[in-house]
Length: 123
Image 1 (cartoon, helix red, strand yellow):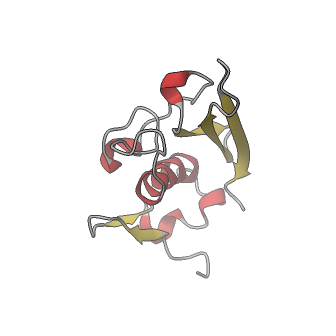
Image 2 (cartoon, helix red, strand yellow):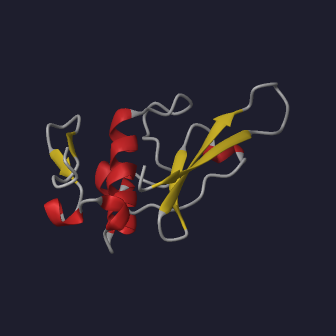
Image 3 (cartoon, helix red, strand yellow):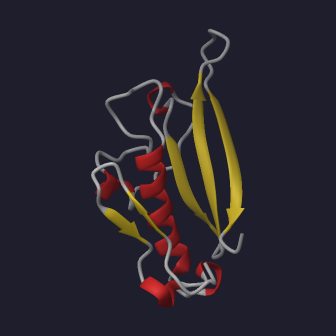
C-alpha cells in the first residue's frame, strides 16, 4: 500500500478495524509504537478470521471474550488441554511477534501439541 496507509479490515460485525496510529504508524516495522499497535491489530485479525475448532462458541485468542479484548490479550498458549484450539500473539524483542497455537491432541495420548512461528514486523 505504499507503506503510508494504515492496515485495516472489516470484521464480521461490519466494523472497520484499523492499525492504531493511522498513516503515521507506517511502516509498522520502523514505527516506535508499531510493535504494540501491530500486536493489537493482528490479534483482532486472528480473532475475526479464524475459529477455534475445539470450542466453536469462543474465539481464537487465548483469554479473550470479544474482538475488543482480543487485541490486548498476550497470554502465551501452552500445551495444556484448556488451551487447545487457541492462538496467542506475543512480543519477541522489539521488532517481531510470535504466533503460537495449540493444535490439540493428535494421537489420543495425554500430550497436546503446540506450534509457533516468529514473524518480523518488517515482513
